[in-house]
Length: 101
Image 1 (cartoon, helix red, strand yellow):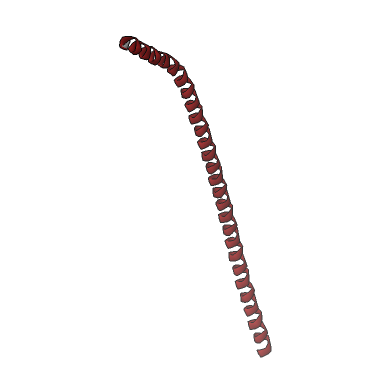
Image 2: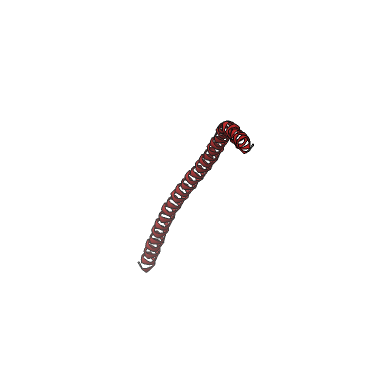
């Protein structure tokens, strides 16, 4: 009886072992699919971050360009103001010279 019970237990375990590999293959497939899904999501996220970084860089470059243009315009305006002041000074000197003559 004990031998037969042991044989039955062994047979039951062998049956389980035979069924396990199929289950493991299924589980392996599921795990592989899960990893692939996670990798795709991670890649999608990295691409989104990269695009955002590119957008930020573009905005910074445009901002810098606008600031440079503004600086150039400001310099031109200041130069014109100096010329106008110089001309006013010259006109004033001319008028004073004519009044004295």
